[in-house]
Image (cartoon, rainbow, N blue to C red; front, top):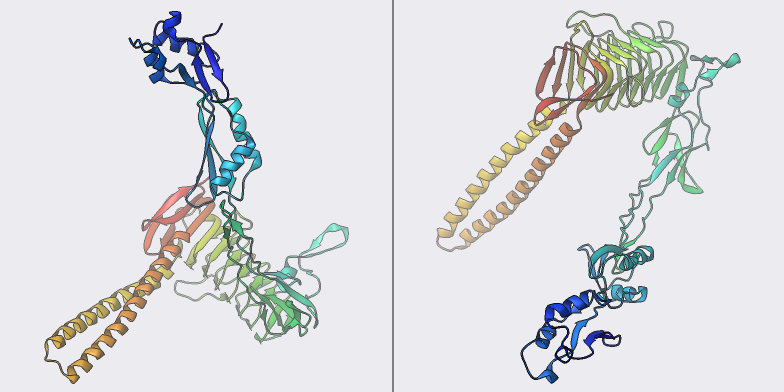
Length: 544
């Protein structure tokens, strides 16, 4: 017969009789060993009661025979500081009852969690009670809030081809061959042709915390279609831009412009110089000494030979541009300039400037190049073109396959030169702050002196004038400090994004200037990245 009896109602484990009556166990250690070897080994021992049973006392009636207590599993819930996660922590039962699913959901609800409970995670969490030893503590995330999904900005989908699309689509001849000079008919649109569709901004989706609080999303920016020359909004759809005149579509960021188009086989002495308010397409070449200027895009299917070409839009020269070799200090005979992107197949002895990006498919030989943003020589994400000799006067980023030539041809590169203008502004703002600070000090001294004068109407009016001057001065100081911070931010952003990427080889003779640091390279280098780090030009080698 067992000496131990368990009461499931109270959870108490008791001795059937006092040990002194039975003579066993003789000590508290023997009693605890007996419990540990029984099926009740996971129960919590009541050491105070066990100790009293073996005290040399004759009052056995006062001794409690309860020697251990079954403990149920315990569960608590903790919420993170953002109210987005609910973590459940559980201590497994020690002889008592496990936490059921209904009990767990009730505990979670009592903690204030009303949304985002993951039933699958909670079920897996409670199931571990069957696997872990009694008294084990563990935790898991059982409820997630949902962050709001910000809305998307308005988007613009182009519905028509442009002249630039045309040059990328040579026509196929019989037998499957492609005629690079036959680019099909000139792309024109008629009144009523759909040009661009605006996809309105979205409001986003609401989020919530585990407490059920709603988190509002940030709505997307509403951007409107730009109605440009030759276009209008569809009277039945304010999000649709249609043509209002016949002409060549020119793609803009948030709209389409319809240009008149002037087409030539070649531009030479028989046509004379060309200046046109619209777009110009030349299916052949622009010959030596000619000048072409347009308010729209200029597209040349052939070569530009020692000519001056300038446009307000994008300039595309499929085959390339070639000038004459020049002496030191002599101007280039071939000059190309565009306010938008310039795309060109090949360039030699040219001065080329873009207010946006400059793309050269194959190589640039002894040219002066400049762009507001990117100069890329070669095609694709890892261009393999060549920059040999000449000068890169300014850009933000340069990407090429090879830089320089094995013969050590001098190739000078200057990028992030806008830094100098920003630095000059920074110095001006700093000097202006000193002037303002001196004026503020003078006003303070004037106020102090005025306050020492005998009270009078004249003194009070003077003090009021000084106070108003101080307020105005404070506004100037605050504005100037904002300007200083803004210029510093622009300088940091400029230097952080400026880089030269060489995907194959950099040869000797390259001179690189980033902002105000200059470095001359006198040997061959494998693929690497050049950037500015703490004011110094550094190289980071890659496996390109």
